[in-house]
Image 1 (tube, rainbow, N blue to C red):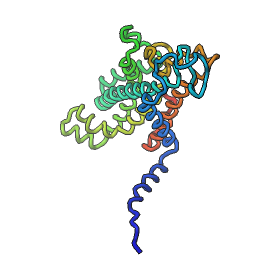
Image 2: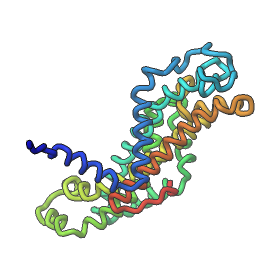
Image 3: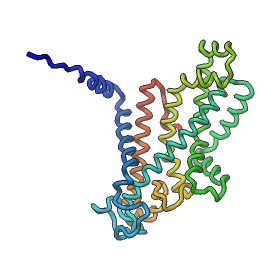
Image 4: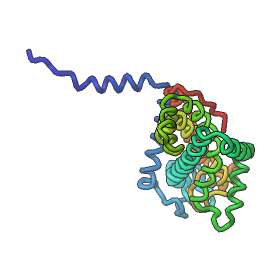
Length: 295
């Protein structure tokens, strides 16, 4: 009898066991996020209509098999617009949060390591920014930029970064203060390394888990912030299929055809729920605590 080599099955079993050991919230959130990413990447290629195509059906005709999310007052298919808007919402959210993470991490790590007057001055500034409600701060920043930049995606990314950078900087500072007492940081100081070098080689690698959880947490609320700006008319300009802007455009139709509002609303809600579940599971994997209600 010839023995059958079953060695190739072991890596699959290992990965399967590793997947089962992860928190359930992490698995559910990851699945939801993967579905949104697939929608964002492939959606524009298979969407039934263009995001600004008019005359796709009878305006305000309600939900049908051909138009699952109904048709708006201009005759545009809401489902197609939701599909086209997926990559816009995700790209703006991740870009703004990533920029805020970079700025906040640099300021927080340097502040916690250098200390002294630099730390005191920077913390007072950050506390002043954090004391302003995040939506109010975003509106002030957009108004300060002027009407010329209104509706510019780069401005939206910068505003998201401005709102979240102070909060990320506070967490990075706390991590830096803890790491700065370690022996390897002391040795780096004795070698005469600069503060920038110590931050890049010693503080940043050891604060990665904290910053990773902060990035995931802030990314979970970025779609809400962007959607709120779009709903209030301070985000992207029509006919861009941004979900918050779509909700604002169709809010007058909520009595006549509520599905035109529920469609983009459900898409936005599912993305936020997926990001929050993923963040909670990631924090448990990394042994961190996170308050999902802290925006």
